[in-house]
Every structure is written in C-alpha cells, then in structure tokens.
Amino acid sequence: MKRKNYFEAIPGAPQPLIARVSRRVRFEEVDSIGMVWHGRYPSYFEDGRIAFGDKYGLSYSSFVKHRTMAPIAQMHFDFKAPLRFDENVSIETSLHWNESMRLDFSYIIIKSKNTIAATGFTVQLVTEPDGTVLFAPPPWIRTFREEWQSGFLSSES
Image (tube, rainbow, N blue to C red; front, top):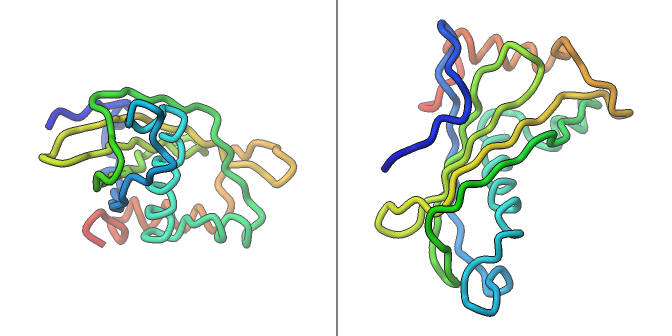
C-alpha cells in the first residue's frame, strides 16, 4: 500500500502521531451512480480528526475550553478508488510535527482488501477566538507538544 508523503520530515522531530477510526458508508453519501460524492470527503477527514483529538487530547471541546481555535487553511484530496454504499472504511489520521504553530494532518481512507480509496491533508492554523493567528503555542498546546517530543505521546499510546 503506497502512501503519499504530503509533509517533509523534519530531522530530529518526533514521529507522526496516528489515530484510526472505522465507519460505514451511508446511503445519503452516495450520488446517483452509487459512489460517494466528492463533497463528502471533508466529513471523512473530520471523522479522522475527531478520533485523533479524542485519542491525544486535541478534541474540539479542548480547543473551546482553552479559548483556542484551529480553522482549516488548506485542504487537499487525491482520489484513488471509489467508495460505495455500505462499504466499511478505515480512516487513518496522522499529525506531523511542525515547528510553526499549525496542525499538519494527513489522511488515508482505506476500503476493502486494503485498497486506498483516497489520501489527502489539511493544514490548520492555531488562532485566538477572534481569528488572530498565534505564533507561539498556548500553554495547553505547549504541554501537548512537549509530551509528543519527549516520547510520552506516541502512536502506540
């Protein structure tokens, strides 16, 4: 299974953190020819980010609690094979280390027989609630990054 590297590895940086979630393709997600409509893929990526946040403490509720936002600044998809109604899929979401105050997520959507259906990425900026971009991590994200860098957080966690 060939995986595309969307983000350049930074020498000495910790390995990406990975979370996986499974879901089933719903009837409402397919178009008239029985394939998942391309406009539904952002919600698959969001399912991946939610699972990631739950696993590593970067949930939407954590952002709200700490009065920090993370709007998506960039999103990209590469479609490989169609998804169809009632298929079970796995969404693998990886957060890649970045020295800047942003969240670089890559995604792999895998269908039956370990076939890649789509890959892609999102870049999220970390901001104040008013949209002011943060250039330094707030304390709670600084703690997360320190735990990740020290090895306390890993994909095996």
